[in-house]
Image 1 (tube, rainbow, N blue to C red):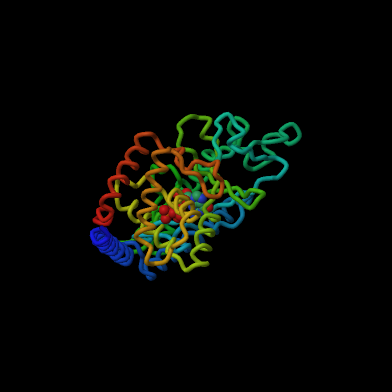
Image 2 (cartoon, protein in one colour):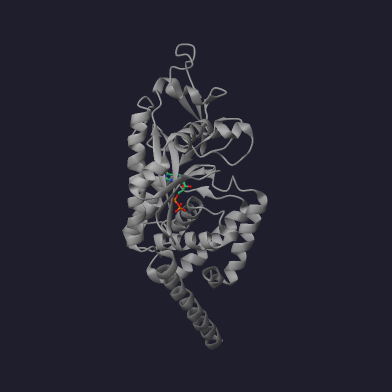
Length: 350
Ligand code: GDP
């Protein structure tokens, strides 16, 4: 009868309420980073960025670069748990008439979201006409070769101990590193990892970054990755701005849970952000009181995407954000999240 149903509803409501309380407590205690810690990390990153600018201008005045800048979750108030990483964006300048960008879906690899950068007009402007010709592989600008150029510089010819002692930091390149990463110890118990991320501006205002596709095949190694990060983050912020919603809080909870649970570490900020943006299309209530419901819904949505092997990018649905995961990785993520649906609080016991 209605009485029994009401009782069950009430019990459910009480359990839901307690998940809600636990999520907010976890958010305050583990997810959120104290402002002082964030400021210290930003200061260290800025010091390194300034040193590198001076070094590159002095050592390689011909290298066609625009001014480097710092970016990432540390600057968008989306970093979680510890303030420990940032990206150093290195915008490369390409001569318009010498290079063209070919979308991944128009190539033999057929991968939307990735691009080839082809060298054009070699007959009129022979090899060597562009500074970046040294990074050509099979007629295409290779992100790997670009990273190697910076790797030789950063790991090979910068006197990090000397710069570190001036700044009172311990700085060392992380080896081996897939991306090019500096480890900066700026206080006895605080470390910051700074990734070098060379990028190419696109005509529509977007960007391609030198972060190679995970596939080992040689032809995949020439692909540049389209970055949707700035647009995604802006959209998320704008939505929260319109209704005072908890989307960013929900995202940060999910990021923290993935950072703290070994079985979920393969899920990255971009996948989580887009799953949340897609959920936002169909779900209107993002009030603080709805956090637990939305968090559970996000977990369910992720399970569904993993089962389907497809998580479309909210800004370009042709892009599948799961395309670089291996099948056993997809299975493990899906299984872990599926189990978490019946014990979501287990995710917070880390
Ligand atoms: P978090 O590292 O999980 O806190 O998430 P971020 O939002 O800071 O994303 C950083 C990751 O996104 C790195 O792995 C970057 O390589 C990658 N990424 C892709 N595009 C961009 C971009 O435009 N800027 C930055 N900073 N990172 C990007």
